[in-house]
Length: 484
Image (cartoon, rainbow, N blue to C red; front, side, top):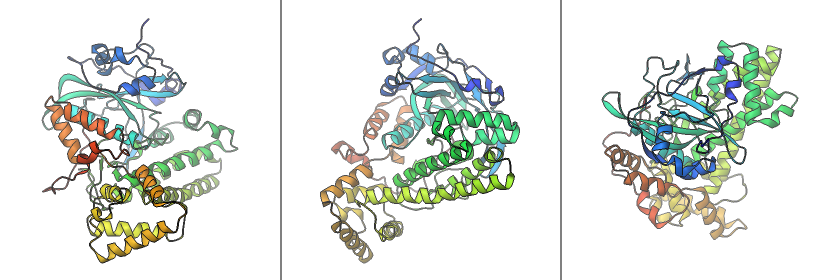
């Protein structure tokens, strides 16, 4: 039977049913395919030609369940803004796990496909704007080289969803290494048995950290592995000025992928206190706080694993604390390496961190654009940074040039390294909003052009020039929303 390339093997449903509920997507009136990611579909082993059609729209809107899929909603808990609560997939349905021609395993999830047992009074639906937004940002993150969930398709439903007003409904098809979260382990530790917690940990190890199974203490090695991946991920966020906006523990993956593109955005003017989320009134998840919040989340993860780390509570706590103490070192090392690359610096010298921090202080004081400052440096256009007309800027520039002159590598080598490390374009907030506004009105051309420009952020092409320009200063700070 023709199944359009679907090749499911659903390992998650072989866990105790404590971890999920069987559900089915709701049917919708008029499914229409708005976005289809053909390259991603091909890499997954899917029949792209068949799916980029009304047949595909039926699948991606939830009207047709692919052969071999076993739809479920996952149960999990989490700390939201520091407060523990029971959660679960309130509007996401895991169709199953697609096995690619190369043998890799990916979750296929419909987001906005209807109510589940975890919807908590919600309608389980999603609006077109937020689903397109997740598609833009997640695919931009992928192109930037940052671990992320991806967007296979966005399908309109032909039905309205009620929010503050009535909005056009849509379903996003999300692809992920998995949807295991810190909150999944918090759920198991709080509400399950030790054996259920162990089953979940063994499953995560087999799926994401198979080498840990060979270690004397596999669960300690697992904890250390997750800490390392998150240190690397958050460093990558900081290096491109990405602000997640809602770093709750249910939004931190065990795989080390970025997940949940709700109130996220990229920083324009460099300011560590930058917050975009409308619900983050205290700045808990501000740009400068993201490394600290990652460690806070990982501490909750370590707490959930304590019964597996050792049979002795005191020893388990000591093992967890020692593992967590490595996060700051790992993050700082990754971040410093990335910042050196953004400045064309090869190797390491004691004064590098001071040089980097002094540049950031200059940028903050002068309200310099984060991305465009590094873009100008990569182009050899110091005068375009806006920092060159001041004495402290000139002093910094001389220090930086002296650092580069002391290297064996040439200036051309440094500029090439900088271009590979500093994107020429990011999904600027005003560009994203313009694309969404046009798409909601039925014109998809602005969205399609933006997606095309963001496919190669390090190209420094002529076509990207206009996408590096800044908007007029806004009357009010830019705010983003969860899109629920």
